[in-house]
Each structure stands twice: as C-alpha cells, then as structure tokens.
Length: 502
Image (cartoon, rainbow, N blue to C red; front, side):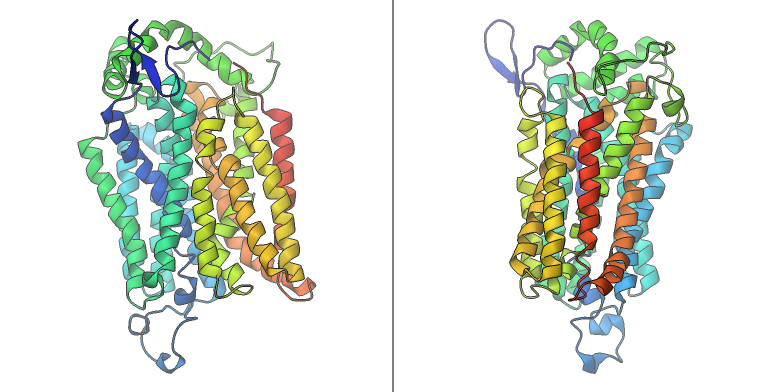
C-alpha cells in the first residue's frame, strides 16, 4: 500500500505527538447517509420472513374465510406465491444493478444522484407494499423496492471506498455489511413482535423501510455530496479543476493532516494503486499486457479483453456468486418457515437470534480484515469452510430429525457468513481492478450477485419440496447439502486465486 501517516484510528498532529481523528463530523454524517441504502437492502431481504404466517393466512380464523384480506388481516398466498413475492425483490435489484452503471454514465449521474433515486424507489416500493392486498400489488412493491436496493448495493461500496482515507478503507468498508445485517435484524425484530402477527399492523413492517428512505432522501440535500473518486473519474470536467473539486470534498471529510498526507503522497499513490490491485490476484503479471491509461473508463467488454483486468474481473464474479450461493439468503428468507416445521414455538425467536448473531460477528472483521492481522483471504477461507461444514450438518439434522442440532447449525451457518463471505467480497470488490474499471466491474459483479440471489430465493422452496420425496420424513433437508458443496468450491477458488500483496 502507499505510505501514509495515518493509523487505523488517528493521525499525528505535526511533531507534537498529539492525535486527531482521521475523519471529520461531516464524514460521519455522509457515511451514515450512504449506509442507509445498505440497511434498507438488508431490511428488504428479511422483511417478509417473519410475516410468512400472516401473508399465507396460517393465522386466520377459518370462520372469517369469506371476508376480504383487509378485514381478515391476511393475504391468502400459497407457499409458491410467497416465494415469488420474496424473490421479486431480487429481480428488481438484478435489473437496476445491471443498468445503473450504463444509465448513470449516459445521463451524467454522480454517486449522490444515484443514491437519491435509490431512496425514491424505496419510498414508492414500500408504500405499494404497505397498502397492497393482492399478489400483484405485493409483487410490484417488492420489485420496486428491489430496484432501489440494487442501485444502492452497486453505489455504496464504491462510494465508501472513494471517500475513505487510505488507512481506513478496509475497516470502514466492513460497515457496508454491518449496515446490511443491522437492517436484517431490525426487520426480523419488528416482524417477530406483535406488529408482525397483527391483522392490520403488520403493514408497519414495510412502512419502516419507506420512512428510512424518506430520511435518506432528505439527507441527500442536507449532507450528501459527490465522491472525490467520481469527480476525478467519470465526472471530471477537466484535469486540474476536477482534482481541485475532489480535494475540496476531501477537505470536508478528512482531517487537515490526512489531506496533507494524501496530497504529499499523490504521485506515488497514483503510480502504485493499480499495481497493488494487480498484486491482489497472483504473483505473476502478464508480460504482454498493453499499456493503459487511467483516464479511459472501461466498459463491460473491456474487463475481459484487457489481460490486466481479466483476472480481477473473474475473481469479482466468483466471489460475488460464492457469497449468494453460500445459501445465506435461503436462511434469511425462509428461516421461520424451515424452523416452523421443526420447532414451531421457537422459530421466531431463533430467527431473531440468527440475525443478532449476524450483527455481532460482523464486528470482528472491522479489526481482523487488516492484512497484518488475519486478512481478507483467510477470513473468506475460514468463512466458506465453516459454512460448508455447518450446512452439511444442518441438512443431516433436518433429515434425521435432530431438532436442536438443526437449530444450532443454522445459527453457525449464519455466523460463518457474517465474519467472512458477508463483508469481505464487498470490501475487495473495488480493490481487484484499477479505478478506471471499478464502475463496470462493480456493476457486473453485483448483477451476478443479484442473479444468484434471485435463483436461490425462487428455487429454494421448489428444490426443497422436490428433495422431500426422497427422505423418510419428507423434510427436504438435503437441499442444504447443495450449499455445502458450493461453499467448499468457494473455499477452493479463494485459496487458489486470491492473493494480497503490499
């Protein structure tokens, strides 16, 4: 990494030995503003999980079957329809994550504009979901919510990387995943409360997401600003002016010492940044790679035609797919339904415990992700192997009827995801390719992330029901053996392809 005078938490103040924060209050406010998108994404993942009983009328009084959905307080969805509504969130995210990069480039949208549109879509989708009483209305609301989240999922890791001081990029980058799991926990907690089972007040669950989006949209005009990376890159209006505008933003976000340190090391930083990213992948570089310039923004095709970019692009694809094919969202989407058949009285509580564990184990990577400690590679390896073993045992526990084993393994599976495959793929995403290719690579990686998310969300219940034919208890627990295999494959890929060199 380029030399810097900062430590993980503070910078020296001249020669006096005094310490000052590397960032300003404005930085913290901007970080909070951008992380609302990540939190709303997590909220969207889990907001229907605890509502499955009421959305499928499992709690409705049979004598009220002739009343309207509003009067009875439930919507008579089948299990397959519920799975469709759940997965339409990911379909919306897939569409927007794929389109946001070319659309923003053609329209000249900066990061702040993209986040504003993300918040606007979140408001509209939440309102539709909260007032709907039909499959079509619920599906449309979820789809529009997904559009907003898809934009946020692409922009947030880029934005955080571009506004963070060099020494803090890894630790602050983990806050993206922390915000996601915090959103999941809040959704699960509200859904598991009396609001989630009430015939009328369950609609407050999607309403909360809309309120968060309103707050974020207001903050866009109050504290939101453009990232220095975008000003110097896609949004540049001309050499020195773009650099001056970017430095002005940095002066608002960073301490004086941090800005001075950055300017002093700008030459070596510019020359070494892309070399560092190439060092993330392997110990050898293609000797016949054509020279490139950082001024040329790379499209999707260029990610694979340029031999300097291809290894990073491939690893982005594989780690983003590995994150979703780990099976984490099968648990977060359907844990109440899965556990309901095993431990019906404890299912909501265990679902809440799962999300709490998810939050708590997101904190260690903030410290451990530093390469002088555990590092990105070993966190992902340990995470993937933990998920492989726990998902294999989870499947065996469900098939064999070991209820406690199943519940414990489900918790361990989520814990394994939380400290590795959850945060690290987002942190390394903007590190694996040069800055000129970050937008396109991020859009591609997260499009595939959403695609895998949609496949898991929509196919999990049908595959589970199909496999239920082959075990004695008709549980379908063998579906988790598929995730055991995909997690093992992810561990092998990370072990073979990922390297981080300073």
